[in-house]
Length: 77
Image (cartoon, rainbow, N blue to C red; front, side):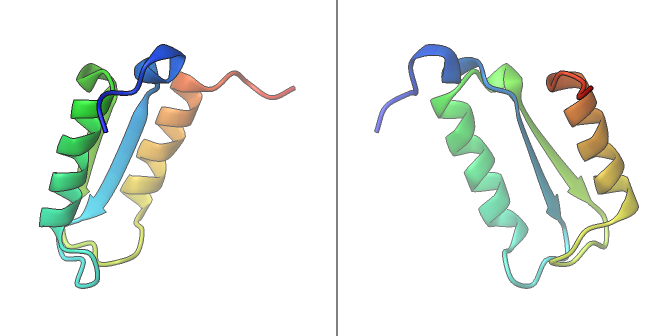
């Protein structure tokens, strides 16, 4: 399908991927981010990779997610 229209076209996306993921190879993460960039504003798509990370998470990734949430979501009272 073509690009997304309306308000969702400007949605911010953070995609994270380990460069040693044996379950979902990094190539598939790269292909996914390129597809996303063709569907929404590419300036709003961030792709982060983490050296040595397998199909899991790491502190650096969690910090990037926290920063993304703090930047894009309103605070909760």
